[in-house]
Length: 318
Image (cartoon, rainbow, N blue to C red; front, side, top):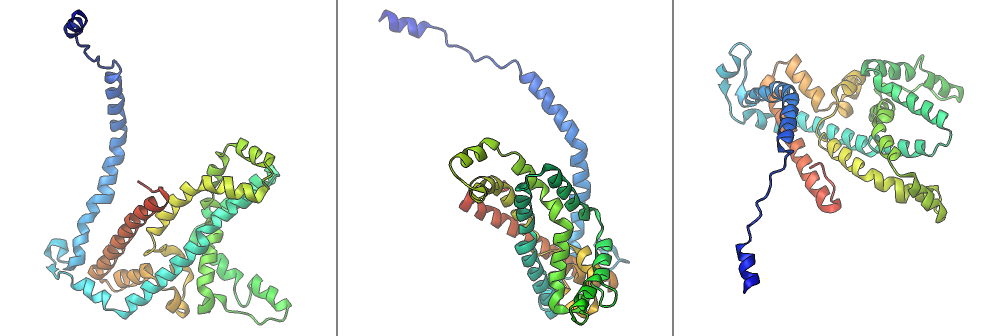
């Protein structure tokens, strides 16, 4: 009884607030102040322009303005969804993006794995540096290089084929070859730059893992399969999800600068189609409706693929 009474009469300890709370609040305030300019710029340039989305639901006239133009509801959406030309460029967009995913996305991974197997460090660094250089060339320069290199009259490639008696080939005007040229140009320009993130991941792998695998008798191929690739999976998943979100869009510069009227049937994509409708034909409402649909589909694809990735692999963007 005495012990229970003593325990009952004992004072209840009061939790002491951490002394570092004030310091933490000051740190958070300074971080918010530092982030404020970025947040303001993000709001001004990314969210304020969303006001222009209502053009998609109007018969927009530059003389009447956005609010003065007449409402047409979903008429612009019905128009392009019933347009055979739109579905043709939509198909081309998906096909080119599929090729870019199949070859363009995997090329940096393969390149990083192969470069990692080089033993000579000096040659390895020089090779990596050279692979970065095409990224800094504009698509205007790259398209000029490809047109010159593949020219049927003065192109080096056709001259090389001529040595073997092959007649000149009009590569840039051949529909069956043009998509492959577009994909190859994108790989040539961006494979080195895109592999930088994979190089960083590989550099962060503990070397003792490779040493232990070598002691256990694993050759270089097994080390790549069981050590290097598993460490690269999170980065591959993240970049794949980001790339998948652009499945319904494709870079405008590459297509616009390299295509010509003879290959429109296989190279005309949504971005070039919107360019002709919007800037050349002044159909601003129709192009806004197409762009809005394209963005919504990309957003839904990103959210859906992220959930599927988290369910299957446990990895995702958020």
